[in-house]
Image: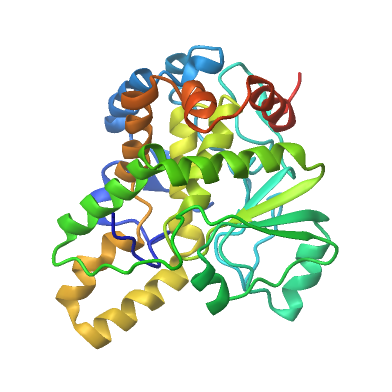
Length: 322
């Protein structure tokens, strides 16, 4: 069984990441030109254009976020990483010249809503919350469910609780995380649960939210799959994933400060990758998709058991038609 570490969904960009992505003031990560070839190569190998449209021709599209005063998703102070899967401004671009809809699906960490933030989230008219954590994680930190919303739990990890690992080096931590992301593709339990998540997102009418708390970034993988279904370029999918580093930076810095105080600088350095959104993690999952299924579409239908009609309906819900 692969060990899973808590609190790994986000961390400020490290020097190693800085060569791949540069940070802009709007929390958008813009690909460094030196990394374009890597992104293009990954996109080509993964054959994400199984949904139509040549993905390679669209690599290089970037996220253009508006400033914090007019982003479509409110910043929720009491909930880290609360954001719209569709992006900011006019929505993320797709390879076929369309835009991803906003206000359809939201993602976040656990809904630890303050009284002040409850009204803000209630105004979004969320009809269902999908809690993708383990039973132990749910018992430790219960969600504050928006008024009128249904609450569904789907244990994607398939274990009673998250198993905490303590790596001795940063390299060991990175390897652990890459293995965990690959397990979104190789694990029968995780594939069945992910299929259930996407099926229910498709079957339910109205605005929905999913989250996976401070454990393995399951929400990040679900968001990546939804953006793949929408036919967003691979580098946009990567940028969206890495936005976690900005949105949850305060929480991550606090967690690392505790580790540093209790265990020392070396321990904090070794555990740092467990808290990061690193491009190698997302790439590990997509590369496993290619190895096992060839295309994301085959992964969705053969691996997750989704009907072609379900994938098509999700795409219709996700994309603004021109």
